[in-house]
Image (cartoon, rainbow, N blue to C red; front, side, top):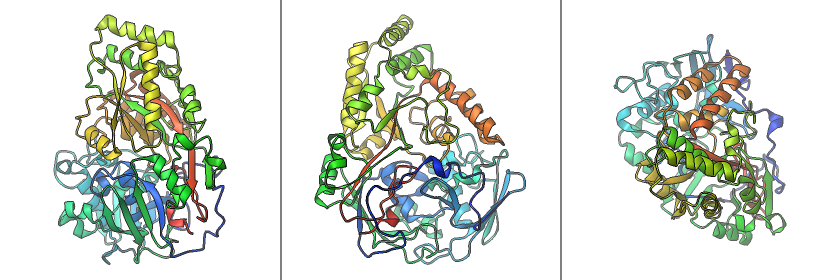
Length: 539
């Protein structure tokens, strides 16, 4: 396979153009227009310093994705396009040769080279560095199942620098769609200066994307300015005078700011405005979307281990949740009850997943499952569901879920609020949370696999519940190595059937686009991830 800048990645464009149309209802400027105006957009406080391989949550991701550029990027409709790479070639889908386009620079003026990628990936996979996104390197020869370098050391054996602009990637098995993953932040390059003091770099990162980070004021905002080194003919040139990501702890306050013209773009309208926002004095957006919402129940919680008792209790909790009632009453139909662990917008999606009836509300079945678990071991505790209050709708749906669980199972379920997403994620990441907690997934690249491997693979960086199932790991590995779509989709469905039985997380619903922009803001479009293409927004 030969992939060059003159062609899109045939066979790697995982979302068909016609399957996801997320055009704005408002706006009206020409995409080619540009302005000096700074655009403001809703966000939340990042969890960690901004090192790409240690950024796996939306607050940090919103910044990292604008200040870095990868080998490939994704179009609005989810097609994969070469960005920093001039070509990505393979004769066997196992050894890939990457050639970097000439002229790319970091914002400090140093060149983007083959070593910029290889050194960054080696850093990310080094187990001593404990990077949250290390799992993404697992397909490469010389890494373990969790993506870290096999047997220790500081270099992945499957990476080889050929010259300043060329390096090779040797995989453990042939994977025809591997290049489609390379636009995710785990695969971003780093300048040489990053390794002099990685902690200082995370506070003031030097990237190669369309924007530079001018300043980050914790719990207030991140100010991004157009990069002077990003190529004018790049895939994502800045068409505005900068982007300021404002960190909110109250989604209702964010919506009020859109109404007042103090916030330009809000990607999630809070439940309090869902029934009225399309008639308010704003630009309203309503489309299908790809993110999902789940409840993760750590296997360490008493009564919820990876055994028969734990499986029964998880199934009982799932059966006690009336997803249709919540999506209608709280989200005014802007969420769709889940039928699987991915999204209906993903290629290969099917509702025909063995065991997915566990996602259907059934009060009698829920009670019976709970009693079966009690026959194994009596439940002696409480079920607490933690959430972050700065996320739109989290308080409302969590309170509704625990009320439904109490009404059906009478187990004293309770909500637990954390003020910010960063605070919740810190407790989840260091494993001190001690409760079930809300989770969700905004896909990194358009594939069902991305909803499964990085979240439920043994040792994966986003495996927040520490789930481990060898059969699941083997099935998704075979899916990744499948050489035709039909086989891949069948194996992914088999992997999901395993998850339906184990329920390491409980799927709730898929989140549609219910977004807003202030009047006078133009060129607002939301992509296949439900995210605004902020580099194109003008006013």
